[in-house]
Image 1 (tube, helix red, strand yellow):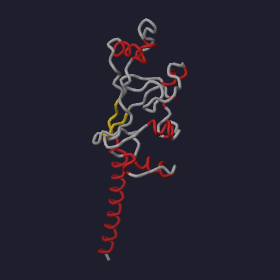
Image 2 (tube, one colour; image 1 turned 180 degrees about the horizontal axis):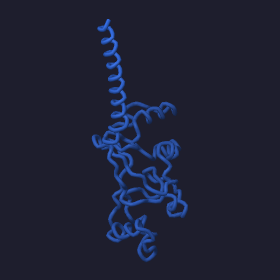
Image 3 (cartoon, helix red, strand yellow; image 1 turned 90 degrees about the vertical axis):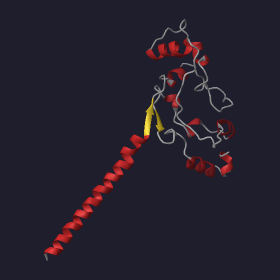
Image 4 (cartoon, one colour; image 1 turned 135 degrees about the vertical axis):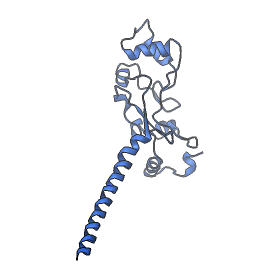
Amino acid sequence: MSGEKKQQGSDKVGWILFVVGLVGGLVVGWVLFPQVLYSTQQQPLTFNHVVHVEGGAWPARTVTSSGRTGPTPGSGVDNCAGCHQAPMVSGDTKTEEKLIADYIEPGKAIPWVSYTWQPDNVFFSHAAHVKGAQMKCTECHRDVLKEAKTPPVKVNRLTGYRGETMKMFVCEDCHAAKNVPNGCDVCHK
């Protein structure tokens, strides 16, 4: 009799240890590992899209050959210098002072950190999607035109991929839904 009770007690302990181990594994895998896997990188400057769009400094233009509208990250400080040179605007904020001192006056490009990154074997054309397919930017990207502050960039420490990089299944699902060719050679070199 006492042997059966010991067996039942050890079964309960075994199940408790299993459940505790499972929950612990899930917490590590879903909560702790992603925090360790991704580093957070800040942009060199805070960029207020709302002020630039509403103020008319960055009007909605026809899409450029890259498929983007307005100034593009890394396009040089010429776009900024038109409004932010010292005689015109004398550094109303710390960010503007840094923009003028660190980038406009020395003529250096702003080293923006990209929110997305595709491997070299992926071919992607914004122009084909925006001009050709008449897609809106917000179908794939967050609505940056409503952002008053640039969010940090999440970078995978192992692969270099960004947290906002489009996953392949999203592209495949969209192509399938719109009855667009979906073969490997459509997107891969």
